[in-house]
Length: 268
Image (tube, one colour):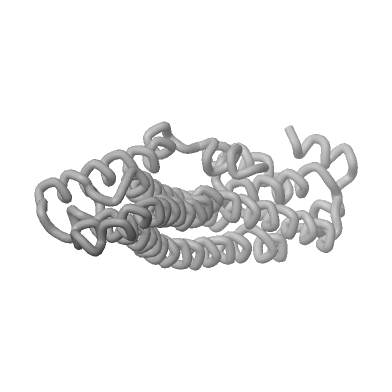
């Protein structure tokens, strides 16, 4: 099951729109502040350095929106894990209880915890397995959960690639403007030092666009590192409570003693 069918599949429309909403509101607020602070270094950085600056700021806040979205999803995942753990503590882990437990966890099937629990319980209900077989199922379910978490970071990783590229485009545009003005500078610098202005403006654009992009990447990377650490702890908790750790408590001996007819009746 992919991330789209798990975490994203169960997300509310508001959560899906969070990144673009943060991007629009954050960019608007940043440029409104720049207008209010005119003249000044901040206003110059955003308002006088070309069209790439709004793009860079928008990308930054889009990344912030994805980070906030992931933080929200993590809270939902932890809640689902807590509910699953409570269900397993309250109900005895017996072959006849697996079916009702699967139905009980149906509302949480889109979560990582619910997906892992359903995979293990479904195999437990549908087969007469050895412990090694169920452990293998648990490992595969956990591998899928890790893949889902990794997939969730693709938008944030894309932003951190696009931000430097946006700054680089601004650098190229600024350098091009500076180079294009060199002919005029060479011909008139002896008579008028103001001829340097176009070159200086182009160089300033080149450096400031790069500066803004680099300043944006650093906090996004720190957010990613922090969020990833939280996700790794979450995945380990799921594995301990519902994956391999859960399998160790399954009544495999009990189901092995059932006749085929009893195993079929247990499923209904």
